[in-house]
Length: 159
Image 1 (cartoon, helix red, strand yellow):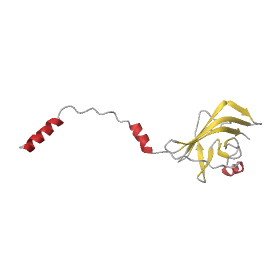
Image 2 (cartoon, one colour):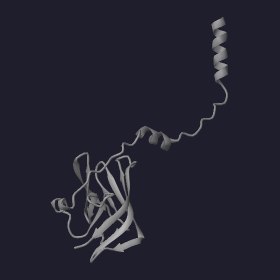
Image 3 (spheres, one colour):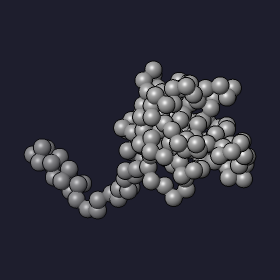
Image 4 (cartoon, helix red, strand yellow):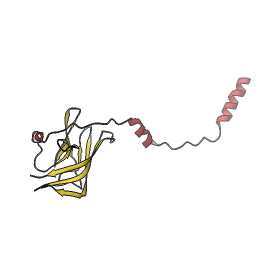
């Protein structure tokens, strides 16, 4: 008999209004599931190597802080990035705002994307068919998380 009383009490207690549930924030759940981003450090690309990768014509370079070697090199069709001692070739993405000489400001590959942004007001002629800008380079991983940022000069030239 006691069992029936307990069972009836549980059944009666479970009847009635269901408690309201807070809406599920799926975006926050997905973001948390990605885990942390792992920073990268591009290795330099010497200017003498650019022809080896097929970069010619109009190109833009992102030099390191000392302006001796390049962290990223790009042309109208491809961008070159060296990470973990591996050279990655990224394809230019169509854009409405090319940097200079129709060189794209966005490049993508399987694991990383590179975005270039320049301050147009800082444009400085650096010789015939050469322009320097103050700008920034952002590298994102396959989850669109920022893994590297560099602010400095971006050099563009056309031959």
